[in-house]
Image 1 (cartoon, rainbow, N blue to C red):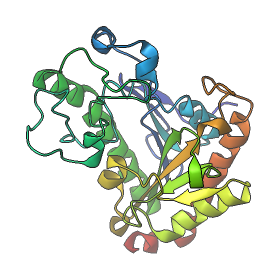
Image 2 (cartoon, helix red, strand yellow):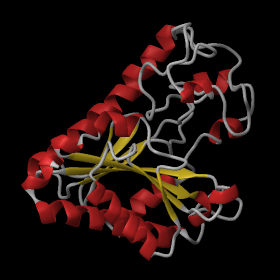
Image 3 (cartoon, one colour):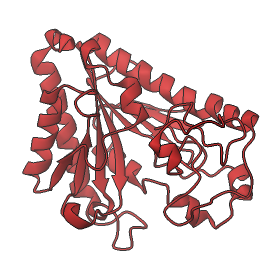
Length: 288
């Protein structure tokens, strides 16, 4: 099916949608990139598969199938190159010569998942060498800042037209285990700091109505993207949505599977519900 709007290629990412937003909902896919620039391929200790383990594998295919007229940003470069869901100062001194040598700035950096990841699910030490300060700054300038600037612009344009904007930051996760093994979708709102509760409740109701077990903020509450762009008091609400990969990938979790169409429909329904919630309240909602 042809989708409304146009696609612009900005080098590191693609932007889908018209300059004047047709919906208050903006969709972001920061971790599905499969472009591995030569410097990281040359510096990798393991195979490309060890880097690809960081991907939200093919969740961009879900987003593209779900999208109607919403603005959509999809990062093309791999998360192993730079993680858009980390702040610029979340730098790991074990792999980054320009990082502060003091205490780690976040738990994620301590666990090896900083701005430049140190490990993946398949390998604890990804790189043969540390990255220079100049190399990391170059990636920030070429990839991190342009994506966040485009996302901020899209949200500002949606708010300007509709009085409110709602960001859906789409991710995927490996199947959970233990007490959470039945959870298929995790919604994150940074513990109610990034989005009004009415939006989270609408998204949660749609997922539950689809027969999927949904959790809130556990084990994923959202990261830098929600912290940076979610501002409910200013009329910008941001929700992270994590999908169990078994819902839309094949049984090996390597490529798109038969469940993708159904899950794209669920995401489509979530976005429609969020748009409805935004438009029903109109301009007064911006003060929530």
